[in-house]
Image (cartoon, rainbow, N blue to C red; front, side, top):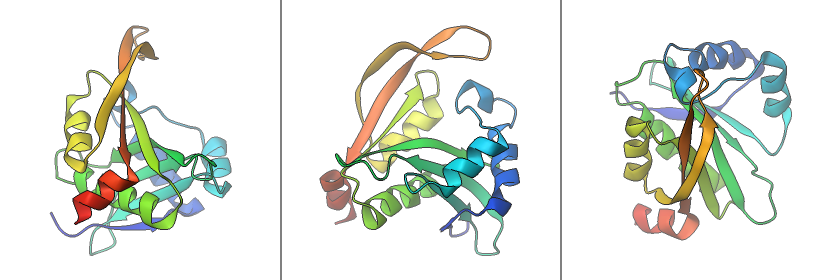
Length: 165
């Protein structure tokens, strides 16, 4: 895997984001927005849309952070997706987004929820330092109409700082 860098998304990135979040199998885990919702969120100061690129400028994935302007410092990883799974992109993409949240905002706690059956994502989150806080029972409505638990996970600014050394 080549080096990955993050940059803020622009309106020109929305087609890539929408294509990526609609990849086969992603509907079970990450959800998707329409163009108008992406445009509104991209313009909002409470959101950060981040694009991961390799050294050649190839777009590899995206992360959407939200609630960045909350007074209590509870920000959320709303969505993360990679264009090509199982290529080692997810971990550095999320690590970069966590660094962004704690270096560029006043976030104290970065949280996310993950469908209980998404074991690959859970492994990535744990590798970055997220800790499971609880279970939101049958809170996820899957595309087939069934329900699943969401696992609630977070990382605190002091935990992130300790991991960085």
